Image 1 (cartoon, rainbow, N blue to C red):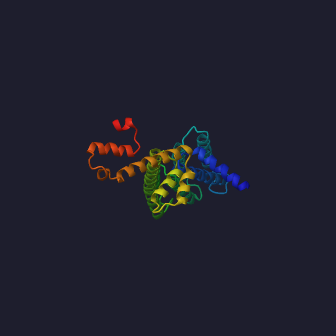
Image 2 (cartoon, one colour; image 1 turned 135 degrees about the vertical axis):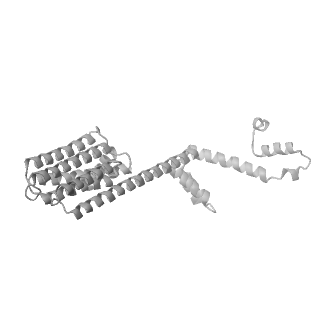
Image 3 (tube, helix red, strand yellow; image 1 turned 45 degrees about the vertical axis):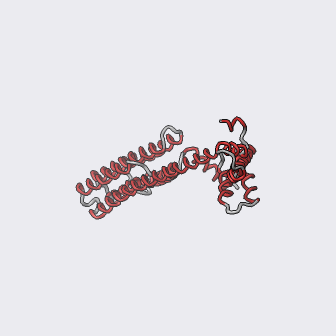
Length: 293
């Protein structure tokens, strides 16, 4: 019971901060990335992962503060989810580049492994951007990644193996392409869903029915031999006004059908065409004023 209540509260929280399915996916990706960054940054700060140095520790604190700030600004609705995600990604990428550059210039013990470690962090940022369907920013992050890889390779041959650098570059390019394709696909899907919903609402408006009423109406129309069950199914879905309108329309249609089936010209061959037309209108139940018009 408690799990169900917690799940319901989480769903309401997510729904209150997102407007469509695309943004809900982005929401979960953003917070998953934030949690991962907090965990790894804390491990780096306490010295479990990485090299202890004041500059690197400061960069880690800055990254952690940035993450918390972006989450807080988004939850307080001061920034949109896309803005918070994009700002965080670009700033985090710049911080990763600064840490890699610092390692290249100072060359502390074990710096080669840390260059790859921070490069993995840079690629992870790009991967989260792709999963979050963020526009344009993946291209910028990819360009920064490749520029840093090129700089590392040219500045220090020992910092990273050229084959590994090439592997990272190719991963960045393909991930960026995936981000562009998936984002366009999601946008197209969202547009198709919107068009479908607009069409759906237009049909309901045209019939002046809700969805259950329209489904029941279509079921009875499509039935080859409607029986009492089909009729009851339709009538149970209609309110009193809808029932009245439906009965009135059926009566009008019945009278019109009877008038068309009645061969007045054979019964009264002496009547003119105008007189026959008036007679049909009488059979349809038209009033004198309506016939005159």
